[in-house]
Image (cartoon, rainbow, N blue to C red; front, side, top):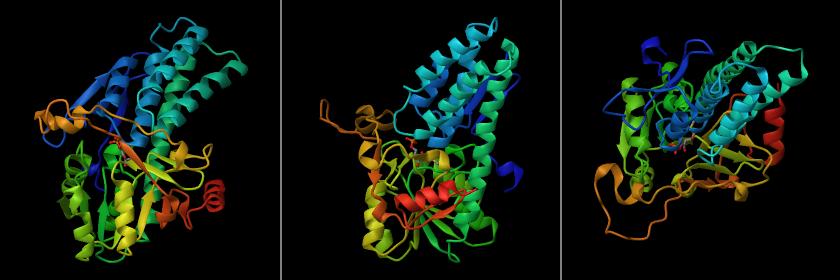
Length: 358
Ligand code: MRU
């Protein structure tokens, strides 16, 4: 990918004691490209909750940097103050959104780093803060590497010139910079494969229309935007040979939570004999839960459905149900593309074997 094509979704500028987190405000895309500056935990919390930063890996990275901001919030007088402030920060950030496991995974890493310094040789407050920033940067850098590996493995599954349907946005904007589902598209395109993408617009918040279509267009990859309800017809017309989506949390048996509507797309793909793939890094697996029934599903504000983007589109007082995610059963998934390779078949032993591989 050319350097000018890269998106830096989330970045830390400056040192641990005085620097800040900057993130692309995704609620303003595709018409405005602006960054939000975050200097405290409430600003990061609000950015995650309101989807200024969204997508499972990007949420985790933003929260890790947010934990650094929190750790220094009471000043850098002593190591114990930093540990206490960090604990308060990670507890708060854990409440920002419930479904994407990457959020909890990243915050666990930040808490574990602080805990490990408690038992090691004595260090001073500044050194602890530096180590916390280094851990957040590692989470960020590891995501970059994992997404590229996902792209390499996934591109091997794409036939020449295939039509690929995707749902929501699992691109650079949802990760450090390269995406998961879109990494497969980017890698195939970089190898000279003339792939074409069908992007579901993704009601109610239009991540497909606003973000996926924007990312693909700016990289010169052919993309056709469709309303969610058009996917069946597009499949029946033979325009799609593969579906690839991202994930917010994958249970031990492969049941996968992703943006609301994904389950329907998987059913449609099965009905049309089209392989349905999930692309996700190992940080998106939650092996502590046996299957998808235990995945917490975020319920969001009814106004996202009745007043999308500033215009009322439903009668006053109508009942609304607005789950932000659904769970696709493992049996509908042809394979899960991870940085360690493709998990196929999607079942508990194969997931464990691939994730445990070096
Ligand atoms: O509500 P969002 O926009 O955070 O939902 C995002 C998704 O569902 C993505 O597909 C998922 O997080 C994977 S991102 C690589």
